[in-house]
Amino acid sequence: MLLTIKNFRKAYHETPILTVPSLQLPAGTYWFRGINGSGKSTFLRTIAGMLPFAGEIWLNEQYEINRHPVPYRLRVNYAEAEPLFPDFLSAYDIIQFVAKAKQATRTQVACLAEQLGVDAYWKTPTGTYSSGMQKKVALLMAFLGQPALILLDEPLTTIDDRAAQILYDLIHERQAAGVSFGLASHQDVGQSTLPIDRVFLVENGLLQSV
Image 1 (tube, rainbow, N blue to C red):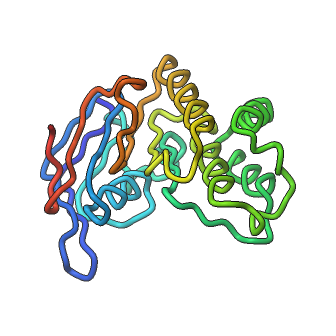
Image 2: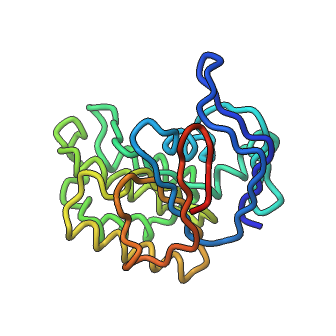
């Protein structure tokens, strides 16, 4: 089982945001739908290990997010919906740091940078980047290393059609290699293009299969 979630509860200042009593997801690709503010981004960020929560999240029945944080985070990658980076750092600076943490090779970094076109502004400070350029940097980082699960929040936001097709190609490549995906979006993520195994609706603080 890829993900096993038990007694999950996320709240802000005692206000419940999302409750998932029990969920088991085998390896595959999942689309979490919901309007803005529904909690889908919070769910992905929590699975990525970025937010505290009550309950348990297990990866591959081996690594629990709070008990085994290092091996868990090594195997789960995440891209923000609207990434923001320190203005003075370049894509190169940021990606080198993340690549080391994710145990990515130089060859992998170079190939991804070329595919996504990030190499065109590799050494330029991110403070000069458009939102689309920043998004590509975040997407690149999500594919670094050898993750078991890649989480993409609003993956199509701010990127053009050509970049979207490149992203679809990258997802297909990783799917073929056995990598699972969690996609959170209020948009159609391209079910005709991507094989989606299951769709969930995030609504009224609950996660429902549709």
